Amino acid sequence: MAETFEHPANAGESAPAAAESSATVATGSSSGRPERTFRREGRGEGRGEGRGEGRGEGRGEGRGGGRDFRSRRKVCAFCVDKSRVIDYKDASRLRRFLSDRAKIEPRRKTGVCAKHQRRLSTALKRARFLALLPYTGVHLRNSERSA
Image 1 (cartoon, rainbow, N blue to C red):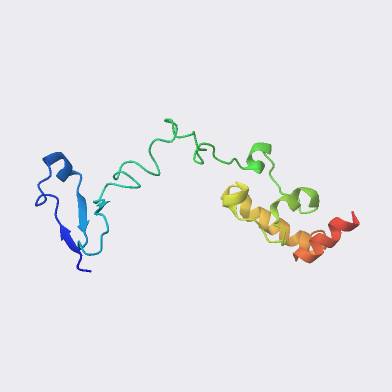
Image 2 (image 1 turned 180 degrees about the horizontal axis):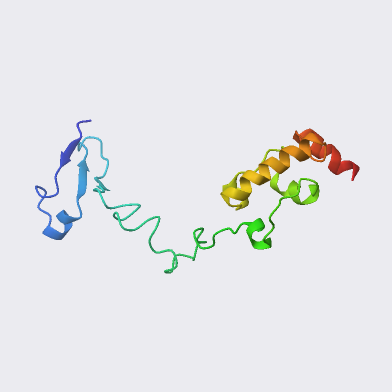
């Protein structure tokens, strides 16, 4: 079972076929197996088809029009309302900024500006201290069942 590798240029193929870089694997004549041809891919060929194409380019150009996540920036809800004070007694409004485990949601998720995020966290902590909001998710789930 002596397998030999024949380079396309040595096999007497034409120049365009050699440019495609195909390789021929010849098996011994005693095995009776036919010759197999494999296509070897160099760098830049294959999945990405080069550096420029792939993730960033060609979003709206016939690719199915995937959603562009950069398009809309979140706006601070407190800046829009022009509210000077974030009221710690308004539990229904503050509950939006808690996760299902009663953790304070980060700015990147809620879209609140830095100034209001600091005031919001203070208001949430005050509401927790006065038992208007839960400290843990277990209490959050229990309050939703009773309501």
